[in-house]
Figure (cartoon, rainbow, N blue to C red):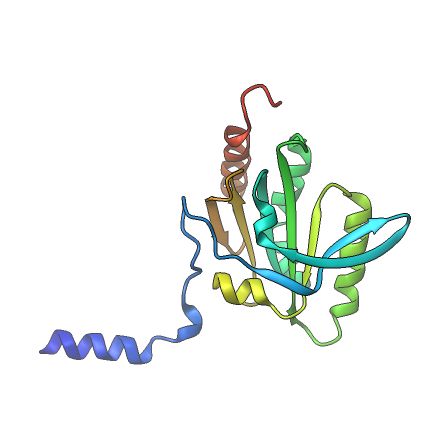
Length: 188
């Protein structure tokens, strides 16, 4: 009887906002579509958006960075993005995708993050940038608010690595090593 009471107390007083993501190593993540804004395109010196769906991630190895539209979230995993740039992974097999959750922005920071996305798209045209205005990916994947997450997907779109929050230097090296292992032999 006391164990049932303890279980009831734990269930009743555990905040639901602390639930972990629902991404599982070896599994395909839940599909997410972003119709409002979506993928940022840069062609002929002009920016535009098109709807985006996570099913597009199949076929290449992806490092997906999901982040709140907050400077603090962007800074959390800047070392990871720099390490990926230095690794110079072949575009034929690899792509970086950054999804910015504009629904999780500080007041009046939306324009700042649109400019940030546009500048980054100009500097790294091979990278994919997605503006998620309603926070659909965060909700469907169960990611933390006000944060950043790094997810590695293999070419068959299976989760191979996931971590929310700031990565340590050891985590960054682990991800870089994993990305190299996922590449086909002779790709580098």
